[in-house]
Image 1 (tube, rainbow, N blue to C red):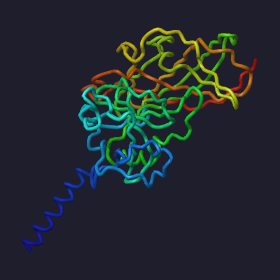
Image 2: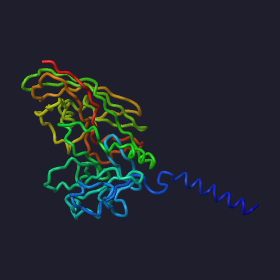
Image 3: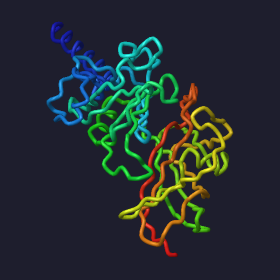
Image 4: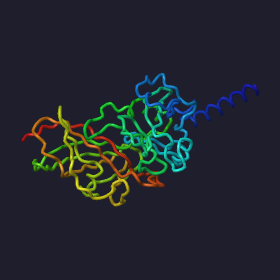
Length: 323
């Protein structure tokens, strides 16, 4: 009877320990691995046959959380410490381009690159992590290489549901924000045109977020980050090509630019953008990239609130322009 009781207690104790560590049980579900081969020809390879290093360079074990709206990863340590084996003494990636594969629940999802800013090669339409990207020292961003001024990324592998599930399994998922484009109007449609658009932004997280607010920044500064609405027809794309230059957006930010949003709270803003070419009549798909300053050290506050960093695309809105 005593032996049975001891065994029962051991089983209960083991079960309780397993439950308290279920986010990493069986190993991390979200991982990033370097490939064994650094050849750029990997871009044309079947991802399933690409060989990987034996241990991940990034995983949920060294991640505080992942903002799924901006694909921004908040690390537990300085990124230089995590990437020290692939960086030189100046904290740039040793290899100009170093391939990686993102893994979710042991499945290969997509191929990307650790990309050095010292590279003189043009960017591919790939997913990239840069060695110097004007984010805080404990943050990395997985950037999509597509040019948002000429196309809408409707097949973004960073938003794959398998990644979403892996992040939730490892308890590092953060929903971030959602941006909805409500309306678009064109004024003074001439050689230099003016556009007004209205958008709605919602905090989808459990904690408070500080959001870059165009009403507080002023249209000109806000537009330098977002670049305005893109108008895309079947054969032509129009965007604000002639925006006025006000500040160096990668180096500047101001706390007075931000509005605090509680969980589930939204703001609705009207923005005016000058600097478009004449936009001919026709049917257009419209969208814009909401963007906020990124160079904010200590972006997470003691109460769990944080400054939202990065950029995310709005939904699309179909409009007709009538001349």
